[in-house]
Image (cartoon, rainbow, N blue to C red; front, side, top):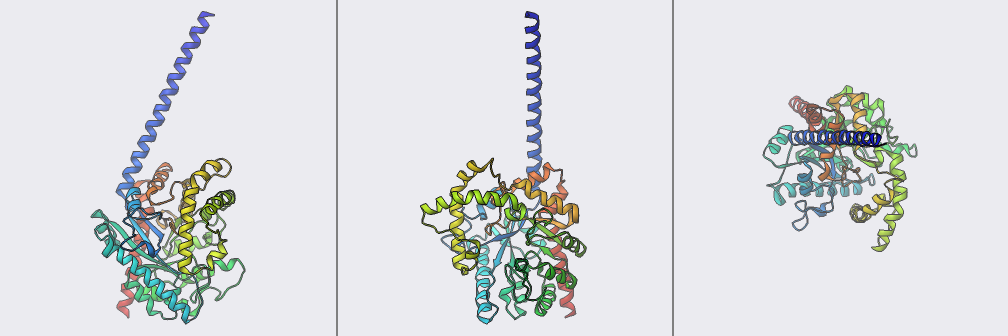
Length: 437
């Protein structure tokens, strides 16, 4: 009996030692992987093609030098190692008449001016506007953050195509022809909801707008128009296109995502799809379940602050200012409710996370090749996933890419190389077209 006990103790000690050694090796491997990811993250230029803005955060008193409740601001960019952000000149779809166009144009100019204030008046020593890929690299090399401008919805150009040149001169480097609702230029993906279309793709003016964007060096963004509008655009454009914030429809069946046919056409065009970290476009089933279960918790927090929750359709009917105010307050309340939601729903309804998001990157790379995929967040416009819920968590995306075996060169392409390559090609086409008049 004593001999058995001694042998048992010896075996226990051996296996405990072996397990401890194995755990130590795992910790060592994990530390090495994290260190490798941190070096890559520091060495590459990280670029996010979609960060919405509210102009009330671009004043002398309240601005992006402060760590606001926004998902993107300068402190969060620095904390997460996000080097470049495309700030978005977004205009919701309104009436297709002169009054609507004038209001939309004024809204767009207000946002252009806000971005200019940030880079020239508020924080010129911290962030600078880039117009070319060379600008991006030069500014980043100086240790400054980089701002770029994308236009979400070309509705503000109205019926005057010369506004495309004006927007380009203000710094716009991409523009989508529609948003949630058919514009004067193109049908929106939202037409899938009721199968009602205004142009059956692009309008005649929309077809001319393709050429104008090519001429003035603006990347054409396919993230919001309808599939037919996108296919027609791809047939007409002389330059590569982008989808500034879209997922793979094969993984998440939403009209905002791109199906395999569009992915193949974008690849042939030489363009790039910027995978979007937007919960509802990454994993609709997980997101719907969690939203349903978390809604009651958020309502409780909203009730305490006398904040009336609105349905998505009701929010869409608000004017621009009211919508921004509503969304800002909602985000504030959701942030307060988040710890309670995370604790109560961690097992019942797990959140859409970075792993789910990188699944889309994997799929797009497999379908299109490493040269045609990029990264976007849609922060402050509904975007974010667990692990990359604001700019301060940007490193977690690089870490997940390293876990999956992506090399430094591949990660550099995903984070900025592919997008900047497209910008270079678009600007070359622009120069050639302008020379020919």
